[in-house]
Length: 393
Ligand code: PLP
Ligand code: TYF
Image (cartoon, rainbow, N blue to C red; front, side, top):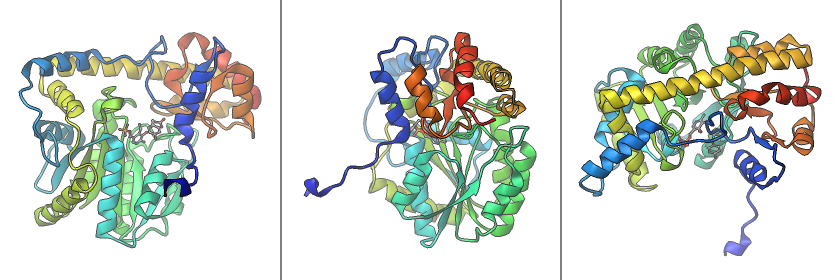
């Protein structure tokens, strides 16, 4: 039977990582997959994580099952980090990464609204469409185009969502949009909240980079207000980047229901979907996060490390924007300094990404997305110069 299967297309992002690894040129540089890297090009375990792991080795007493929600302290701490306060209209599940939460959340919304269409930004993180299709959604897109101030063109967002109606699901990314870095301003979050509230669609917010934009609180505050203004929502969360826990698969799914009764039903349905999928989430990553967030000294240590990562990203972002403006003679690249997080998407000419890979061993996915963290400080000017001939201003 298995010999009847056709070859599946490779993940475009993970493929770039493999190709870069195989390149033997000494000055190769991998700007592909979205992992944070320090100035040495490494992704070390965060010191706060190491310390939490030492504590867990000492204090952990059992490996018995935790149940479909996973670690209750983790659920409480992460829920509060997102919402400020949890009410009887909220529940949190630990999930295998943000991706696990996306899969369960999308399945849950499909059970609630079998005819739902899923609206996602264009461009987008390919996994949103991949998971949405796997769950059976009809996928629609809205344009996500940066204005000169690094925020999205709101008229185009609203035009793409004009047709969305009650029973549909609208997926918005939290801070640090992947792949563009183009984020709603707080005023735009408020505007989109009224717009979606008027339509009665289900908002689905995917938060994968809290703390990588402006700050831990600043990044979530407008989303908190957005959620407070609406009766229901699904939120997914990833600790892959801000705790550097990538392979530990540490994420969350938060349900906000219109009432406590509705929450009860939604929680039961979500637990049912989880049972027939992975049954229960992994424990190690959530235990690490719960240990960090619940101990003030450790939390401070983690926050300082997160601040340092964000500071480095913003430093590179600003210098890269200036270098591109200089090398292309085009002010259009100045927006990159105002965008947020780990990514920027550059308008390469057709075949430009491949030409740069061939000539200079600079690796990016075909979409022209750049992992800002992959740019080492001392090579920003050189890389901007090598990219410039292949860019459309
Ligand atoms: N959502 C977005 C926008 C992402 O970029 C990512 C990847 O990092 C995720 C969700 C989920 O990542 P993970 O499943 O590793 O937590
Ligand atoms: O966009 C990225 O590069 C990260 C990492 O299937 C990633 O979000 C990429 C592909 C994937 C899972 C994670």
